[in-house]
Image (cartoon, rainbow, N blue to C red; front, side):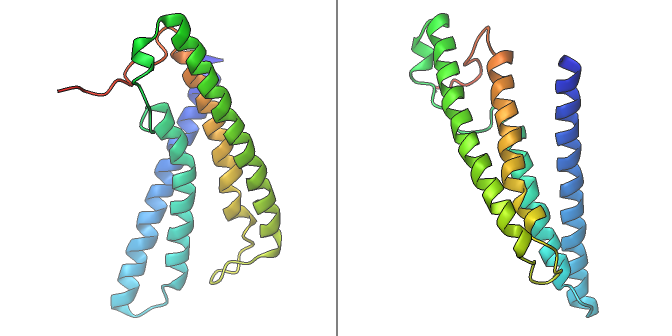
Length: 162
């Protein structure tokens, strides 16, 4: 199981880096096109789509490193058992939200079967697929966060008090 988690995380990291590199290349191509007078409209659209997918995948990576919003006022005053219960409750509500996001993303993706991108004329379903994929990645990271932090559920979440 640990190997599967490492492979999953390595794949999301690699995809994120590849999307970033692709987006940078598309933007650079677009800037060069402005000065060298060649068609750049598709580079802008590709960079936008790469950024959307980066945001979708990057949310799971941010969650993995604890970079998303957290409230710690209550949790630092609880014992270990209460912290574990609170972390499971938070995860359950988060998974419910991811379920709603996934369902809505599937509906959006289905609507994309009938829509075309304005410049490249691609079917938009592959762009809208970022929403359910993001929900799946976030859901997996939510479960892994609870499991990995079971011994101290809110470690590292405390804000610095000066």
